[in-house]
Length: 147
Image (tube, rainbow, N blue to C red; front, side):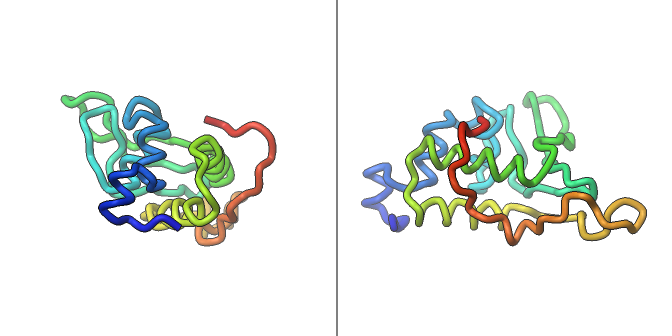
């Protein structure tokens, strides 16, 4: 496991460096999301580092700003938690993260969820997407990742 030490950072061996470098920061949706997940705010286009909100329908949303003069707006990023998990699994594969780094990235992703509203569902009924964010598994490789 690579610790976040000055030496590891200098060698560019941390999962944080690898995912931001691979996605080219805010130049892609997953890159902008990764930068926000790491607690950074950059020039737009970007996501706010306040975290993700999972709606009662299971949609994953976040505050997004397209241009520096725009206001923050809620944007649906993924239709389901499973889709979010698949994208980050693909990111781990492309960045060649080892198992410890992948576990650490998914732990950070779970912490980045500010609110999970699926427990109540719409009008007090349970949601169809009932996978708790805390139990998002580290999915095994199942074909081509979605990026």
